[in-house]
Length: 440
Image (cartoon, rainbow, N blue to C red; front, side, top):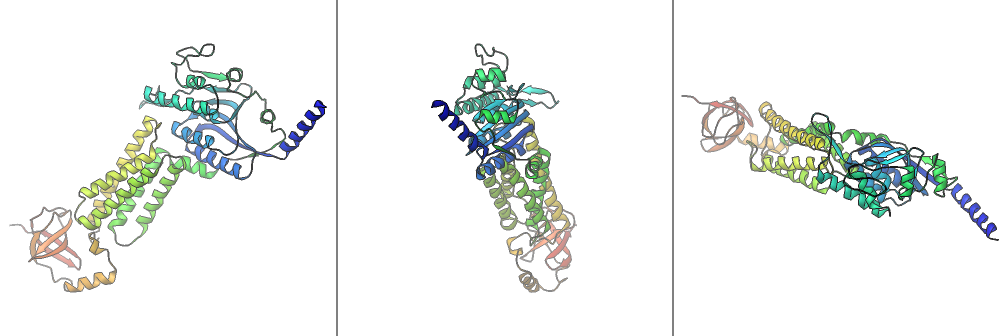
């Protein structure tokens, strides 16, 4: 009777598994930003499609820790069972992702571990990360193992050479698990020659395997989060937006700047680097620059403008680095942001010098009809030529001159004149009055 019941249960389980679907995701090569968006999308769509489980096949030497941490969170938050299949190797960051899965199966020859964090120094030589980073990564591995009911000491030994486990690894050596030792220490649910064998061990024999391929979106995220590409996007965004604020109306510079900013934030949000604090820094910086350009002064960047540039720089920087960002990446982020701000400042001064018709004060950003009416109140073009006065502000070259008690926006030919310099209007083009210093 018991045999009949067992046989019926086995047949029922087989029929149930035969009608189920399992999604297959592949993590091979270096783990980066694209891996995060790929896993998040794959796990989300698998759950939405009613898949019975998601299998992640690993063949990776590791990758960036910031990306691995975000991918680990995606695996821990998955609403369907996750199965790791170590097809070749799951080193470093790949070991963290495998441990984050609910079940782990090994292919013959598969290995898992060797996860101490490293970085490349300026000469290109690989060095182990400082103790502070090692400690943080060690805690991350331990917490992940505990959450999945595995021995946390084993996970720590993969990261820190100082961890010694009797009968497994001695002090001074990093731990790498083979299929046999992984099963002995609770880090493997079985060894399987093929993926189908692994599914059979997991009780999913006969399930339909649906591969989820790497998408163009994931490749785009990988590309846009590279330090050099991120730096280019920052330059385009900052220069475009500041130039747009200096030119009445909305045109090509603002459109290109907004597109670059959107691409930057989208890619860094996808990998979990850009947070609300980054958005707040950027918005506060833009507001400060708007106030500086349109309200506080028309002649140069004052305190509000400098504060705005610093806030924008912080917004971009915090979007590019995380708790485990490697030193070379952090340096790239600092260089990229600094160059972007320098280009923005230089480009703004170039624009002011080349396009002196630009109206910077808030009163100048008005409808053309209002500008025309104000121009008519000041008389016809040429009426101001020959008038003498003094520079009421520093001219860089744009500023304000005072002529018989009337303050007028002017542009000096010399490029710069200090406040109080005697000046004379040499050309009158309505709102654009060109002056030069009166000498002698």
